[in-house]
Figure 1 (spheres, one colour):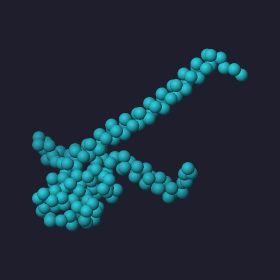
Figure 2 (cartoon, rainbow, N blue to C red):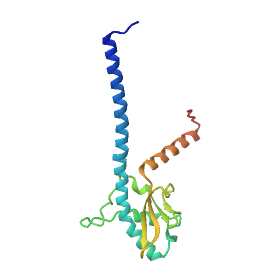
Figure 3 (cartoon, rainbow, N blue to C red):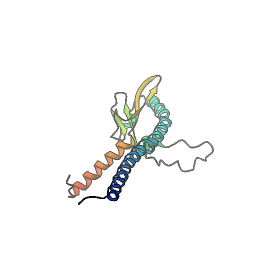
Figure 4 (cartoon, rainbow, N blue to C red):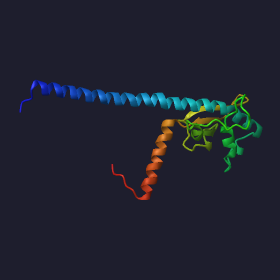
Length: 169
């Protein structure tokens, strides 16, 4: 069966539209990852920079990280609490962390060994030094949003797999 010029033109337009949609989908995905996920990481970094001075001050007061190497996570979460705004009364609730940055924070010692926080943090995380008297005594780490989501996906898959569901690939 021979296709007429109208059919050939229709197929050419259809294939062109399909290619444009695929390219658009790919471009949107890249834009989202670089834009929105980058924004979430930048917000986390900003929050991290406000926490570092308090952690450095606590290290200086205690002389080591031993006060955080306990099962009591309360001191760690106290550091994560944002400073109250100058014009807000002390009783106002703290600013919420809608970017999930607090759960992505960790503290590493000067040798990059984990102390407290997100156990997925390592040298490939977003790192900022914690300095005391000019010496780097540790690293504040932020697990990138992309890595935190990926780790959550794996944990979800493993929890479903453990219940008896099987996913074949």
